[in-house]
Length: 484
Image 1 (tube, one colour):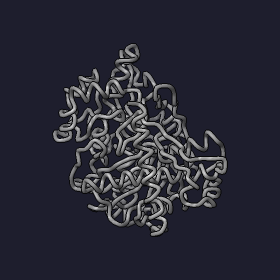
Image 2 (cartoon, rainbow, N blue to C red; image 1 turned 30 degrees about the horizontal axis):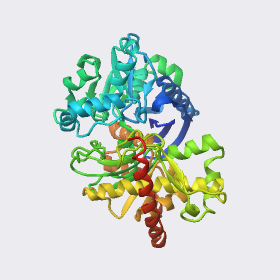
Image 3 (spheres, helix red, strand yellow; image 1 turned 60 degrees about the vertical axis):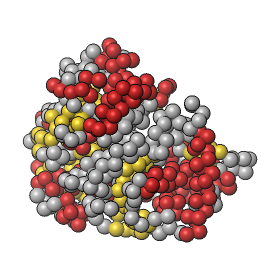
Image 4 (spheres, rainbow, N blue to C red; image 1 turned 180 degrees about the vertical axis):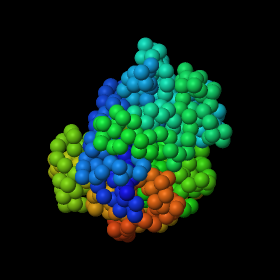
């Protein structure tokens, strides 16, 4: 017997097939594009997510009887609203959370509703949230917005294609800036700012709730059986925090994915401009975190722009000394979150000369991201959100032994790598709990977690990165003034 977890990340989807004992049987991954353009545009076509899910599910089901699939669960990056028309199909591409075109809407909300939003949403206004993004569509593309009849979110759109449901989960709702956390419901006032009504929004369910079954069309497309149960699911970060095993207060995760994040498990929220707060899958816990926008996205940009592959970058960069012979990268490709909260910031390479090679630039990207994560760690520590001396390292970038060591050295903490820790595994674990494979989330972690590496910081390297960080901060301060 098996469960399926399907994740939609910043640039790719992954499906994982897991058996009733917590063993991963198969995985499949496929990429989809992001449409980057003028003014900070970053859009994705929701139809690409569905096609990627279909492709991945077909691959993991090869040789497996679909009747053996007990449950299916989806997850995706939050903030990504999908605007649906009369036919329940998207009226436009979805504005991805890294899009920075809603600066005017952000400024309007900050001026007129800043305190109200902070009280209700536990976050300050930024361009990453669904509210200003939807307002941007309404203001700049009124002919498109006039077609909107319902609003859903990335994973919920795909799941709806599988089941016909129209629901979301409480953690996803927290990422919309349309939801009152204390009342645990959509907020009519915030909805009206986006030109929306309560009737246009999905109902809110718990992540493990069964919300439907696989329909005939999805069964035909994927090879699944009609009637396979599907649970609501949750956001990708909630799932990967679970998959890593961070289920106790004080546990921490460091994520090297499209964005880089540091999350510390807590029992409270920390309303702050540069801290992102979400509820944990476990009742009573939260995972406040700080983030750098372009983590693995920086390395992917480097690959797509200058050629090569990730194994090449590891090999080349390993031959370059710490500090890259004076070359420093500040990774603000799409603006920055912690500690600048500035969507207009841009990246830079500083200090290069004729002696620098492609290998120097590859390592500089890895080091620059690590220094940005150090910026995040310092900011959180100053506010009492302190990771222990150990943290789980997760995300696609964690596959790089070199990058893991760079991050451990720069942050000065031990990193724990588990065999599998991605969001699709977390979705499998949720599905497993829902159908009774595991008695609890803790039981799911006990059955799936296997530590394969511990990366200890090298004191001399930490000291070197500390000196490099001083220069990095000076550059960041300068970059933050360029768009004033």
